[in-house]
Amino acid sequence: MKTRILGKTELKVSEIGFGGEWLERHETEESVELLKYAHSKGINIVDCWMPDPKSRDIIGSAMEGCRESWYVQGHIGSTYQNGQYVRTRDLKHVRPAFEDLLTRLKTDYIDLGMIHYIDSADEWNKVMSGDFIRYVHELHEKGKIRHIGLSTHNPVIGKLAVQTGFIEMILFSINPAFDMRPATEDLDTMWGGYDDKYAGIDPERAEFYRMCDENNVGLTVMKGFFGGALLDKDRSPFGVAFTPVQLIHYALTRPGVASILCGYDTKEQVDAAVSYENATDDEKDYASVIAAAPLHSYKGQCTYCGHCKPCPVGIDIAMVNKLYDLASLQQTVPESVREHYKALEHTASECIGCKACESRCPFEVKIAERMKKAAGLF
Image 1: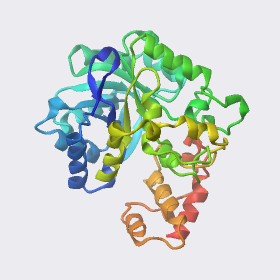
Image 2 (image 1 turned 90 degrees about the vertical axis):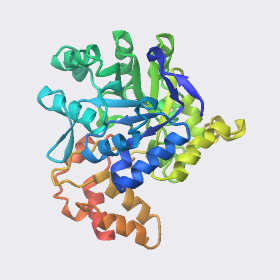
Image 3 (image 1 turned 180 degrees about the horizontal axis):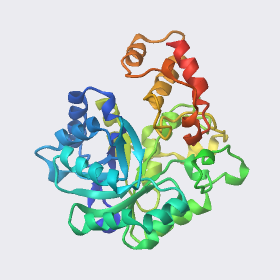
Image 4 (image 1 turned 30 degrees about the vertical axis):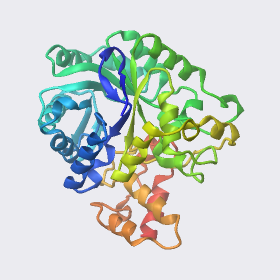
């Protein structure tokens, strides 16, 4: 596994990382073993934006006895309230959530303390002028976070972060489809339809990457596979499928990028990502795929990103959608998919149709309608 220097942090991170978002979907022992397996393949950076106790406990157990050989992106402002993920800047929730992160990860420090998920100018101004950012600096001064980072989907916010001088790295969403989109702070319209105007990398994004490179602000990558959509020609906005190796190579060839944090459900998926290290130039070639593909809109498609949370009745909307998509693509519902659905704590039939989730969905997915379809299918 090759490593790269993560900007001014000077940390040598594996260029293939571990996005921990789906860890809680499996048995604890299985997920702990998956993390240990990834580590044995040279992966040494893991993102923990998840506030739920199970995910954090899994990462803590996997790192036990080898903490110094892992780099953790731990998010500040991602909290767990009444069994739901809540993004907040309220210190009465932020402080205990961060202390919980340290406790469950069985550590006294976080390598990369991430200012969690800012996409709008109003949110940026609020965070940078209040108690929240003072708390972040306090954690840094005390050594509880070694470096200050930030996560965003908006290159305009990314550029502001670079200009602070104290934010050393950024977690940013990068893939060939996203890079064609103009900057926006409104997640409800963030990923609209494609047209010829954006048939190439958006200038704002190109400028952001350039600034990161010039100012030695390292980038780690989220959403590199577009929730799996870019691996499936029927769901890809390009109308063609990419391979994991092509998408990894795309991300790693952006200026400033040190590591792409892939999501894994199985050891085979870890192997597929790590195979990048021995891939040929032809296997890495994504440019010919993009050049030969027509552009398509992905409006209305769920990417299982989780921004629909929290659900007032506790439905794991992203997982229901994922299982629905897996099942609806086949003539009959596979028993394995049906069993995973039945094992969910709350199913689609419990949806009350409030559509609060739809107001948060960046892809304008008609979630309430899909919940009805999923309930009927299963």
